[in-house]
Length: 423
Picture 1 (tube, rainbow, N blue to C red):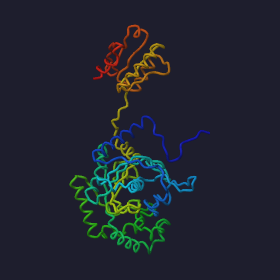
Picture 2 (cartoon, rainbow, N blue to C red; picture 1 turned 90 degrees about the horizontal axis):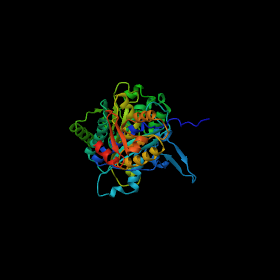
Picture 3 (cartoon, rainbow, N blue to C red; picture 1 turned 90 degrees about the vertical axis):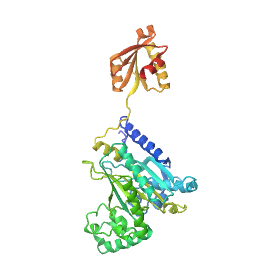
Picture 4 (spheres, rainbow, N blue to C red; picture 1 turned 180 degrees about the vertical axis):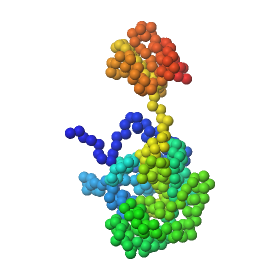
């Protein structure tokens, strides 16, 4: 019996992987302009990191983590998200002492969650994310949101909606928490077991429940915006002013809570409202997490970030009919006929590649017609023909595959002549 790929994972094959490379390159280039530096953290961490960082009451920790004991009996977990690992590294490596503040980081890599696979959702998926640690300025909130919006815009997406909310500071959240408990408690028996467990532990998570989202009490639940103290309200208003000044449209949604426990103050999601995108419209989510560094044993440090799914980004590009302009052609294909020509072709290939050209030749002893077909499939700009007659004359016939024009080039000066023609 053939071994198949695990459920919820995917092979990214040639022809498709180039799209990923193009997106990753665009994200790296944008981060360079915004001065975010790359960080790479382990794919697995101590389970406690995510229990503490993501939150015990979240679906991720309770239901979705891939955890295992190593041979030393330590509980390890494949990372389900990126922020906790980045904050752990920031704290452990004392980046709060860096002379350049805030510390602005980005990451790109696989995450793992055991959930039901569906369109655009996998058990192994790739997230690109940024984190800015060390600043409490509302302007950095706007910058982080701006970076995400600009990446989508650069890639051509037009049907986007930014939804934003404030979860307030600690005092605001306590006041809202008590209001939520009083609101849901009399009828909590009508809700799912998860919501019943969350009532006292983290009632805000009830608002994020997928099973009970149509319950009447959900529609009338107290809004966090009504419980923001003056400091939290002023902070949120400043973030919105910056977004307006940057020309970024947004919609305030008081029901937006995000799925992770560490968020406070600004929370946001970027959604696709393209027709036919599907029921799950969220492309990107993020927010502020003041207090998470302290939770990890570091000093009091404010932070904000976001993460976006590359898979969902690709799905949005497909729905909007956007083709990424990555290069999938080669510079030269060498058609070689006969043993002597094959040896010469290898030398020519090496010359071309050393000079920075992409080049290929036949390795299957195919006839000339089949080799030309292979050059066509590879979208080769030029074909260099090398047979007995060419070798005898010390030349190769170079054909421009777009115009059909063919010229003779001396084998002695092949690489210099090819460079001149390409220019």
